Length: 448
Image (cartoon, rainbow, N blue to C red; front, side, top):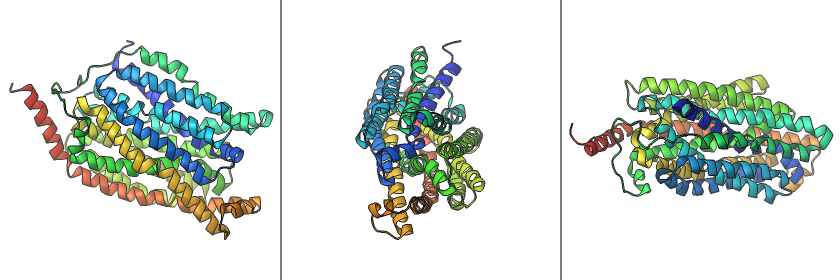
């Protein structure tokens, strides 16, 4: 049936795939864009930082709108904006043009997470949310993998006949095109009532959207999101270039290896965490966050040795394993948010969570990693300025940049250890927060 929950999940999942395809296409095309506009790694990182800062601020009012207005229409508007600005990248002729279009993509994509996760919370019962949200958040690795698989390949296919500038611009057009199908499908869905999947009807709540910040566990989760997104955006921005520089691959080959990391690691991590999360919650109410902490700790050494390995295949295997550990976060932590936040505040909670995690995490990930990469590249080459670095022979320049980026990515396992510690602290407060929310819901219904 067209209006079934399953069909709605399929459409929302497809939209999230496109969300992260379009978000990662900039990272997939860093090489040709940098060559055309003469970008440093710091400038590349700045594109990601500007995107995330605007995304974070725009997401707060959009999250509030998602709690009081049609989530379907809000998501359709966001999808229209971000796909249009992705396509508009075809016309850019400068770094400023790239910045403008990425900012536009950020405005549109800010509508996706608050609307979709709130919608999903009303489609499925609490006991099944980890698996459902885990499946939905597979859009992160699947969308990223597809972006890396196809973008570099499109460039390599079109480049010989049309030149690299035309080739990477056409890759942006391809990234935007699926919206032409997804927008009509989204508008055909029937939106569920808020609280439809809850055991008790949600109480009337006239409090401010910021009232959710009084939930201790949510504050720990917000801190964890900042650490996670620092790593995710550093990986998304620089992993293709890391593979290309260190192992001397073509753009398409580097995209393939990155796509393998995203697809294999992301799918295994997302599906595995959904299964673990819905099983552990039956016997241990704080088990989702405990396992989230465990997986974060396990991923740190995998990321470190993946970044330092001299062998490409070993590096890909280790990075895929580390990425799997990072992707367990979504199923385990997003379902925990829904355990402690009432249905009428989920859009607001996700928007505030996203604002903090993007401002304090994702906005620094690409920029700081890029800055560290440039700094270590200068040190490796024995020069003092980027101009002197660029004046080196092509072989010496590439060797220095490879060394710089390889040293810079050590920051990822360091922050992954901190992520595990923060999630462990969240696991110590969630039981009380769950009891408070259940008591409030029961009191609103009244005695049986």
